Amino acid sequence: MKVQSIEKVLPCVADPWKLRVIAHLDEEPDLEFLSRYIDGRYSEKLGVLMVEMGCKQANIFNTGKVTVKMVDTEEECENFVNSLLAMACHKALLAGEL
Image 1 (cartoon, rainbow, N blue to C red):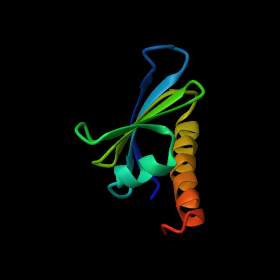
Image 2: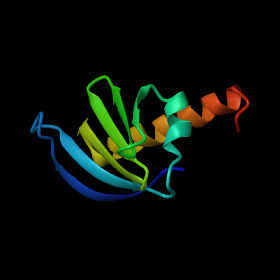
Image 3: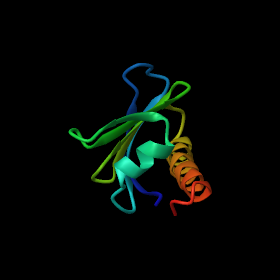
Image 4: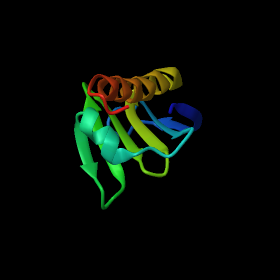
């Protein structure tokens, strides 16, 4: 699973010098699975996994939509999301779940 497309790039509400990006994954994520390996808050009711790393914030929705705040470029957003997903898969492999 990885970022497939960028839908919108907007100024961040918290810091207008940073960006807020709306992207889409190439498949619908299993948020319950990801939440076991990504340190974040998972809400089954809302269908979202909220992750903060440093000043960056990502919301991964069960539809495959992803919002990222406080990034400098689209590429940084894509790299941030893809690294979160890769880290979760790597941890799952080490735990024998994949």
